[in-house]
Length: 429
Figure 1 (tube, helix red, strand yellow):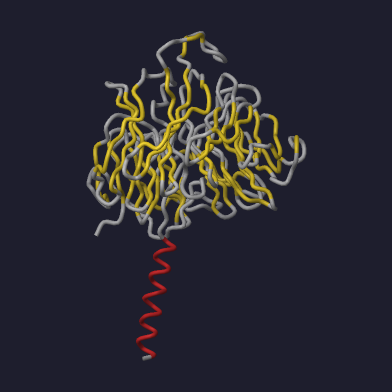
Figure 2 (tube, one colour):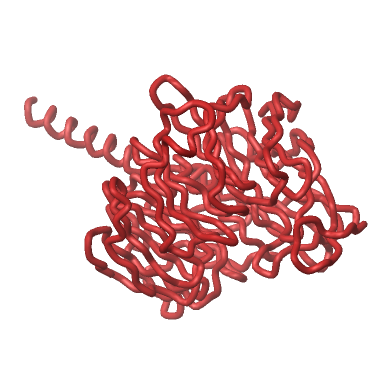
């Protein structure tokens, strides 16, 4: 009897551990919005050309920089079919990559954009019931581009948010507002309680808006300062009795209450435009982004009002980071800059522990699992790093395809969107 109880206990414990170690990847940068995975069985080595540790690879229609998201055995991503001007939402089976369904969100002229952007760049989000996507819809008309050095015309438009159920049925569409940018569009929906939150930083009347999950009805909308394009997805944390939604962009960094859009605190500057999302280590927020000047900054979150002179814990200008979002692992902040350099900072002091050229160029944001950090370069080569005082590379993995999106980690696999294919890495028996 005792032996049977012990066996049952071990089986139950194994099931609990397995359940805890497997996570969905429900939106931009995963379940916590910061590139972290709690899974412990994530692959470290693979090779696309030889097929080593590749579970499956499927061709994708159209193009896009949006990352895949995963909920259970459902995998979602968006794409743009340039030839037909369709913006589509794809649903695949996570297990084998087969297509469950494909839906056209809308068909409209292609917007003007930066050469390194795409027409489908905003990663979707899901709560397990609905899938939310955000795209820019234009009518083809043009106006002189605001806030640019070289005069040119751009296509003004409106942000369209759409919600689908897991069977592919459209539940609602809504527009939180207009959007104008010479660099195109990228805004990832962020889910909080019963809200879908959209950052509308652009070269017009910028805003952050929240829509009701069930209907798309506008719950709140607040203006942003400076009316300058930026592409940062907010991160939300509960800190000392306050729920803080923090993002950089449009010449400042700010914290809001996601329930109503009221502002907690703000830091002016330190630059004009931002792309990378921020991260939090339990004590401070980290910003690693900027154009035309580049900055890495640690910020204490306990302020109120204007805190530029009081709550910046440390500030470095040594890493030329703009697009890739960082990760924080224990006491280390890992930063990739666009030019192919990796950086490791002491999160508490800001001391840069090392800097090294790791890849050709970086547009993908960093992810971390099992104490390792994954640097995916634009040429599809991933360097796997052990965070520490000295650079330690434990693996270098070739995909054999260009990459502009960020990896997703779920249920023992890494999912990488290449230029033409979606790859599932790991879990090969």
